[in-house]
Length: 256
Image 1 (cartoon, rainbow, N blue to C red):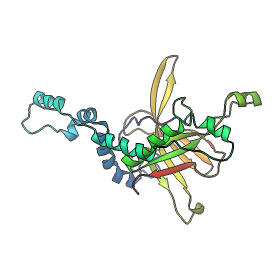
Image 2 (cartoon, rainbow, N blue to C red; image 1 turned 180 degrees about the vertical axis):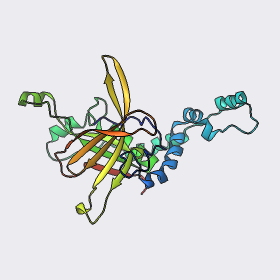
Image 3 (tube, rainbow, N blue to C red; image 1 turned 90 degrees about the vertical axis):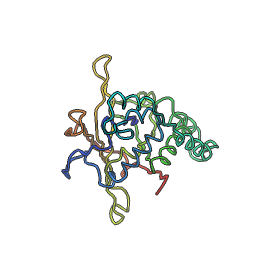
Image 4 (cartoon, rainbow, N blue to C red; image 1 turned 30 degrees about the horizontal axis):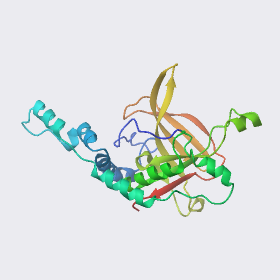
């Protein structure tokens, strides 16, 4: 699974009211979504304010379009919230994370690139995770593993440097979940995650596609939208089994 960088749609995307529609968000998701929009404005500041001027700086009755555009271009919003958040996170994570036990050489190497992107070590990942958990209320960690279907020999396995890696799933991207303390020993039974997948097109081109990943104990499904509109329909493009029997997702709460 690729690290989630952004959703091609918006927080109002429902995917329809059909209970069998994979992109339909849980009603509780919609109760949280207004808070996330406000948090994004506070985090991103002036650029977000101007891009969403129709919401935060609506055109007034009798206000000329050019006057409104001038007012928008002069409006500023200092992201003090993000500055305070950086200070809070820095205080909590002022000391590097220490891993103890097991194969220490393995963990020492693993912590230098926990996302398999070549640039995110364990401390940076924890910083990003805590920042999102405190601002959006919660965030999630998905533990994934590289695709091994093309590996045939021990040499290929060693060369691939196979290791588990972490994917942060921010709160807005988890659109559905099923959990009952009376079933599955109280563990998650299903999670649906929105993704914006970066797909190579031709030799040099790139395009982004809306997808929804469904995780269930021991297996997964991947669904893809037929276009990037809010009302796009989704078709299943992939499914498979996982080597673990439980959904490898952990939620970190900033406010519970």
